[in-house]
Length: 249
Image (cartoon, one colour):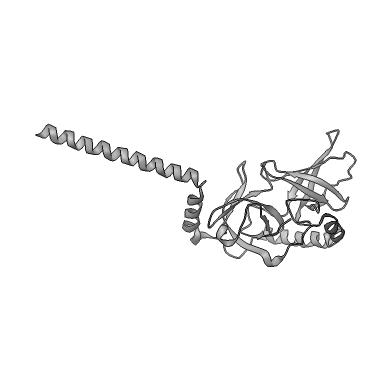
């Protein structure tokens, strides 16, 4: 009788283990199909008590001052003419969505931040994200309550930009560090340290004249082009609040 009872208990335990493995398998399949949306929404709720306040650090305030100076320099010079030529739409502040940064990966190779606004708030893939100082990146994907933003420091990021002083377009490429690279396909481009760059009026991804950064150093060793290291005005590692621009280019 004791042997029969042990066999019965053993069968019951093996059946329970099988159901447990099956449940884990179904959960993993669900996570795979949802692309992590369930995890992000769960993180949204558990991190809610720790969301940042309204106060920014001193470095953010300095970035805001630089942003205002660049906007004064850019102003509307050539902006109206270029928009008419390219039929670009003006962005409207009424369509901006304010969001808090609830998670950030600014020290890793694939750099991104996660915001507390998602598809239920009207956020869409491709929306432009700015912070105090200027451009941060673009929305890569969304869940119901959150959105993931690929930063312009990420190697995934390639954007058309504008060097205002010399009136020339260039390509801004993320390198996985804090200083994206500006590529100018003209060896004769008279770029200098301290030149400011902004989003290009010819860009198909961004509204024009969003401040981005300042030229920190220049590499002239290549024969066919010039490259420059860019110091960003908006600092992803200290920014707590951003704006999502709902504009159609």
